[in-house]
Picture 1 (cartoon, rainbow, N blue to C red):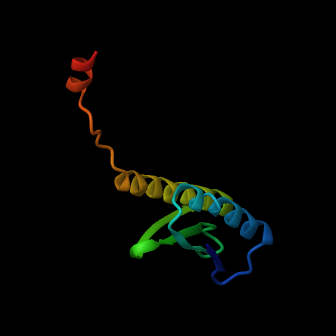
Picture 2 (cartoon, rainbow, N blue to C red; picture 1 turned 90 degrees about the vertical axis):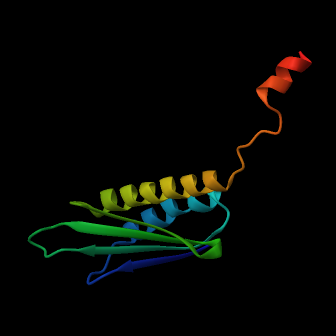
Length: 112
């Protein structure tokens, strides 16, 4: 899995990059079809002090999972947007899983 970290119009601390990279390592553990993860940080005008984090995850068969989050701190924004993407990946994987059972409850009762 490749990892791309972008800070728009400012130089981000290495700790933010490490946090984003460590947290995004969860994605291949959930779904092994993850190809690339992008984390994009930006902020509004300095007087507003609103920090934005956008996480884009590319998976096999052109599936893309995206989440944006804004808060007063980059760490909060990164963690909550990664959590949102994690939920999307889990839902997607659940849809791929076949939940049908071959044996119905009636057949089990007859055998007993």
